[in-house]
Length: 314
Length: 314
Image 1 (cartoon, rainbow over the protein chains, first blue to last red):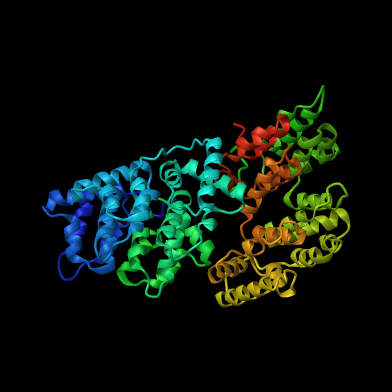
Image 2: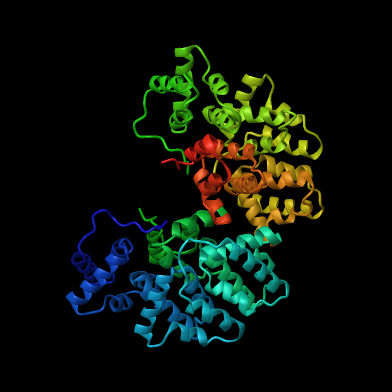
């Protein structure tokens, strides 16, 4: 379900590093060469290139990329070149900055990564920023904090086993709390933030069967309520991540002026995971192939790397 | 997306015919042998077996199956052995009989088959039953007839091209008619029964974007209205066939006593098409793998052939 295309014969990390070094030298930068290498290596291969480059030239590849490139293209190349855990740490850090402050990023990372990947992101964040992701969650306030702190803190069971009796009773519980408009009730938050994704999905299926509406519809009472919107997005990203990301992309692309910040994040974080599935969802929901929609809304090297990560630069 | 498993080395039609003949002879019938052959041959291979059997033994394979087998297992083997067009003709004929009368079958065949496959089903029906499928549609009445006649009669454009301006204007049109509760309005029916599936999907996406609800929700005004239910099922089966079939299976399996009639129809008509996708949809919506749900609800040879057609008899 990944879109990343890696050639069957990959040059050695030393060769790739040498080519990257060449791309940085002389008059101007050879962006096409950078894309042709980095956008066609998987996480393990990029890590080796990163290490080899540092050892060979005594400089950090990311620092050199930062020096040579700029704006949207730079952010895409840097985010992509990072490993998944370091990238998540980077995104969380961005989301705490004044200009790019965004509670959704924390929710997205906590909800759409596997338990182990979330754990690795937490380690990477600690190692780099000398504080914990949980601490970031604590720095929010009100209901949003009530949701984010356990969401980020739980090491969710990742398996497929489902307890149907529990699913029934918790569907009833969720329905009661929602009927009472107790959207921030601790029992409701406990179910959403601690149950395995498979269990939560079973619970929400029962909810739908038993009470006639999807939970998302029942929570759609006030589209201006920031907490309710975040809660709905949390539920969607836990149970239907490809639909969550499709909606993010739809909003990013349809926005006047394109939201490159979100577009780059989704493409770079999902290209090795489920971007194929997200693209299918996108085409079904928008009647336009995702790569064509992205091509129409972007240009230059930024467009080239996004399409390359979608496996569409041949 | 098919679930049918065909071995890499397939015996000749003559060998398969001989084995089937053996399965019918002597004391009792060898059901396992029948399953091991027929449930692992594709439509073209089954057609050759059917022809070879007739030529070799001077009897019709289907007649012999009919003589040797009984009840749910028989219907499953016969439906499966038929080619897709002959099977659809058989199903339409069943649906016109007093005890198994069902307008949904006609809708299902008209909506979920490709234009060419629907055309072939019409030819097969004419050849075998000496009347037209359109004639069957005309023998319904009221609003149901207004829907079924053009649904069955249209040779829909099957391509992917979509006209977005048209999608917008027709989304508006559908919304107006639904707001007026003019569910049987000729313009609404024209859009649903004649537009390509891709175009209709684009229209319904616009509808959802523009008016805040899926059309299915807006048509969910009276769950006892037979016409409205058929209209909603038509729209779902045209745009999300895997969800339509998932729901059919869910209802068939969850019913007290299991609806074998529907279960057999879905498994035999989709095993060479999209049963894999339907099974994924089923598991997501019910938190149980489809093959396990079917195994729990069926038994004996009937269970064996259904699981074989799902690729799960190894």
